[in-house]
Length: 213
Image (cartoon, rainbow, N blue to C red; front, side, top):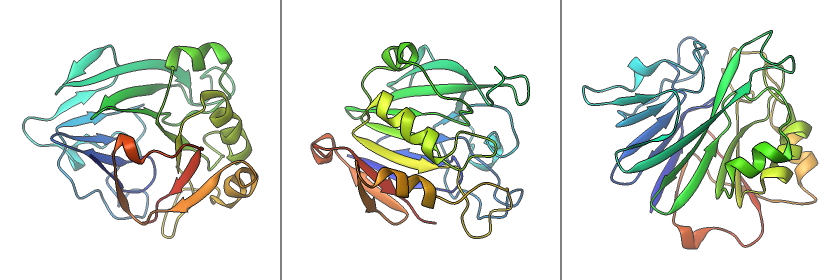
């Protein structure tokens, strides 16, 4: 059983016997509450201030991972390089896509993906149970582009991130356009701030799980 909790933006906490945190922020820099967690493992998709505040979640024994191809705390982590923009990184640089396994579940975190992906990359990523995907546009793919990525990767659960919420000072879009485009093909579940999930809980048909702060 994995507990998945959203700390806003692209920061998620995943906990079983180990606590893994993705793309931590410090809260104050982007206008929302800071993450209230201490991580065993931190994944950093790129070194922008709203994704790399490791100090906000770090303890003495924390392992920070910026690229995959390794096993940390029994978590197998793979990674692929992608771009933060549509100009092959010329505007905002590179980002790292992470795929990792915890408690029999396969997760993929797309960081600040700024462009569509192709079938070749989707095949390399492979089967995904839960996909964390940016949908807010401006600095990343937008809602319609995100839906296209979901159709290529085909996760069983989609968790949107990096969109406008109350207090967030970054000029990104709200989640509405993504959900409107997704409704014909996906059931949408609102799961509050956190959810516990087991492999047996995964839906037979793809769903979108919307977290709130």
